[in-house]
Image (cartoon, rainbow, N blue to C red; front, side, top):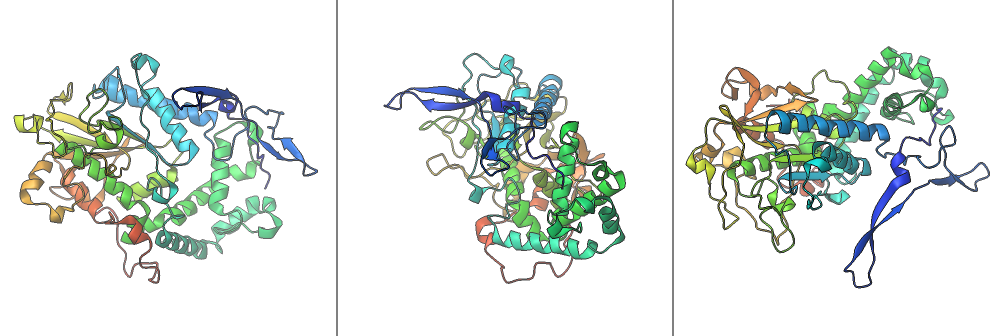
Length: 485
């Protein structure tokens, strides 16, 4: 395939910065500024510096790196978040002295971390931070513990399931008129070892789709031949890619549970923590410093906003598992999901100062949180693990299923609603359409009880144990297990 491998779209390479130790007693740290160039093999297999189509050497991208265009669009996303949650709704403060009311997390992929950083910068640029603003906390995990994307590399059973569903798509589509049409367009550029385009060809059809989409997002210097951008061909490729990667979430509880259930369970856990105000909302991970956990560096007692850098497969997995991805195309670049927690009605004294099971102090009322008859209590959009055993450990109800929660405890969840927006468009979860499961007059506002009940059904009790279970069992469920109920 005719692909220009060295893309000159990463100007960050010319202005890299890393922390550096500057004293032998580890007491003084500084910054080392440097520029990166990529070295590769030349025609004679000797070392040469990688260069772009016009000889560019100081802006060549690493594979999978966030490009200048990606930085622009994630910065713009941060601007939109600020406009909505700061300027319009007055939910988040205009000026912050620290970020300990904001839960930030990213996967180990560099572009995910860079996306979070750019979005945070857009939402809170230097002019919206005080002069003494300390470094914000960004959580990461080791690859073996990562649940912020479907982790088939570290979950054996999910790897089995994903391969089986991918093979089913290949068996279903490889010898069809649709695939013949794709071959008439682009097979001449396939490698000699895999000349026919197929779902499981080399490169795979989904890999071809990724190359098409990424080249379309950037300049003409790195474009493929025009046949790759044929509209009918692109629609076929998109349809098959969505089926290969995401049909399992729509059909199998086990697929949902292992692929994205741990993340969705963590989202619900933090929502319940926000209701109970016990630190389970992410405060125990984000706030404070060593030896002084349990509250933010500016005295914050609650997390109000969460932002996670994840991937297209994360977003589609969440939407598919909640039955909200029917008829959708592969998520475009810089797509995002907003999961918003609302409370309907006025505050009461007991709501203002609920008991905090993990902390010695009680909390005061949030400022500027009340708006008309609704309270935008928390906006949540990423996963969380329990705090380290050295941290205060709350005893909330977030990890228990609705069947295990008492009637008195369920009363805490009354009048709370969850709304999910995909690329700024509200989406409706099928189970939330049922009578009593949504705000009267608007099915996009799902009751927190209904949302948790749906999520509980595919939240694993112990993700790592589930990943090594059922290894000798069939990959497909005996009957269809619809998502979103």
